[in-house]
Every structure is written in C-alpha cells, then in structure tokens.
Length: 84
Image (cartoon, rainbow, N blue to C red; front, side):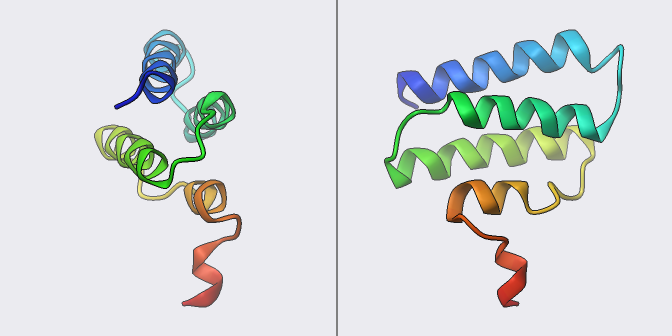
C-alpha cells in the first residue's frame, strides 16, 4: 500500500479506536470512512480498490452489513445498486 493509502487507513483506525468505544454507532463509522476517503488523494484505480478492500475488512470486523452505497459512490461515482 502506498503512503497516501497507508496514512488514510492508519488515521481511520486510530480515529475508530478512539471514538467508537464512546459512540458505538454505524453512523460514526461511516462518518470516519468519509473523512478517510476525503484524505485519500490518489487517482490510481488499483490503489483505490485496495483501499476499499481495507474498508470492507473494517466493516466485517465491526459486523456491518453495508455502507449504504457509500463505498460504491466513492469508487465509481454512483450507487452500483441502481444497475442491478
């Protein structure tokens, strides 16, 4: 993982470790995801895909079923579910 992705994931994990025990809500996780996505500065598709893999692993570890299309909109620019 490149430096920008590493910084984004590390910052996200630090923020979740600090804030999630106090406010264990899905909305907090998604808000932290949005912050990490905003700090992710590369346009390389392979690195963006890997970043999404890490976000999905975090969701799985937290028992979250869905991001409510947040990940799809960030990656593709539209909710993928619209076309299924």
